[in-house]
Length: 279
Ligand SMILES: Cc1cc2nc3c(=O)[nH]c(=O)nc-3n(C[C@H](O)[C@H](O)[C@H](O)COP(=O)(O)O)c2cc1C
Image (cartoon, rainbow, N blue to C red; front, side, top):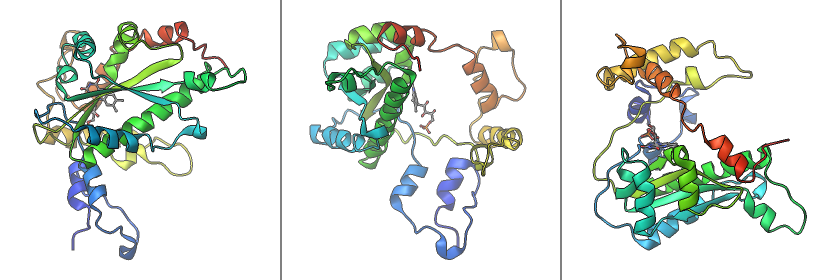
């Protein structure tokens, strides 16, 4: 008998990840877990509109996410006005899904609300305030993604908004201590899409204390598995800087991407918008 999740684990990790434990402890076949294991980002959407009741239900589920200290420091802007959407989309012409998606949301870390509701001199512009609001907004974002996918929608988070933080802050009229974590495109998928493989537990799960001694061989094996499924050989990033690699895997691609210095203006913008990031 094959284990209940063999196909889904193989699709996600590239091999039949052994879950371990006695057979009787093996989790029962669960349709939602399978759907999560097979989930994928979608960047092309059909013309089918997303009903208002669906958007509201998804947002209600999203805001059911856990919240650090019950501070509830996430907010969402629904970008409904075509002019507003076009202004955001024009900032990032190489991602047309920002303008094309039937629904576009922006998830905000909102460190302002705690100060606004307080009769006491709360100061929430510290690193703690920023970090808590970031975590809350991220949890609401991911819960929104899973809720949307559960209802058959496809999504694509958009963090490149932060690469244009001055313009985005102005378009969305963000006050001090409110910042975008990511946008989110939402719509019924126009294509099946594909599953993006993840690193194996040897690279990501450790026991009792930090120990990344298995990382390099695990990533090397991952690079090869991923390359066998979907090669990046002919899509090498910035060959004029890095040259053409004979074997071009995920780790080389991500290292080159991380060299590009994305989001460099963000810290200065935060400091100019109410965050001292101290203490
Ligand atoms: C916080 C965050 C920001 C992202 N920003 C973008 C983005 O700006 N543009 C884009 O096309 N995809 C974006 N993505 C989607 C990722 O590229 C995608 O999740 C990743 O490649 C893994 O693919 P998968 O979600 O299909 O498994 C973002 C994802 C996250 C979680």
